[in-house]
Length: 255
Image (cartoon, rainbow, N blue to C red; front, side, top):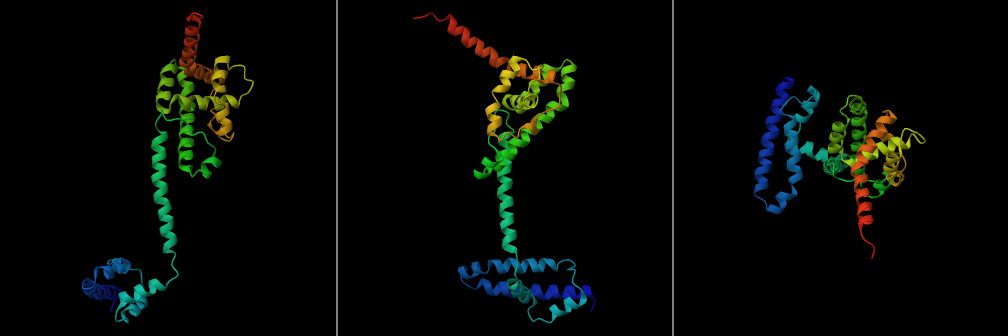
């Protein structure tokens, strides 16, 4: 008998064996049927292996043919193996839940209106919030790359205001200013950063410290004049609002 004939013969025998097993099982109480659920699934998996070429050699197939109930023998042997199936299931469980949490975090931090995460990796680890830390980190890296790639050309090409608006709409003003502040923090004493830009960057000093001080990864390589212009432009509405509040207070009559 050829290898292919042996495989076909085994498949036929095991299929018939499984049909008998299932028929007998259907006559039993529902609780007993449920208790055999794992065995039913394993038997089906073994049969699926024989639907195509198994990879077994002639002698291995002949050994299986010696059993009166080869499918039962395979299942019994499977139970007796020191299998790492539970470890694999545990790993699968972790992957599944992590994928869900990562997806939710990515969606959350892709929203430009959502605030920065603001915790260090160590704090996130303790709080079981690493998916949030990673999503926020990736978003800040993407924000920095976008500015580094297009900011300089936009500045020299007279399209800087339009670029900044698009950048802000995509990543949010807070994240954009944070990236610029991280860049300025790496260039302490640079006189090309004017007071309005330095004041705006100063608002993020505490956040940078809270995040562990390792925020230099978000710094960009653009010229300091480009960084200064971007920070001043993004801070303008806030400065205008502050001036308006001061003016209103001055206009109020003393009581």
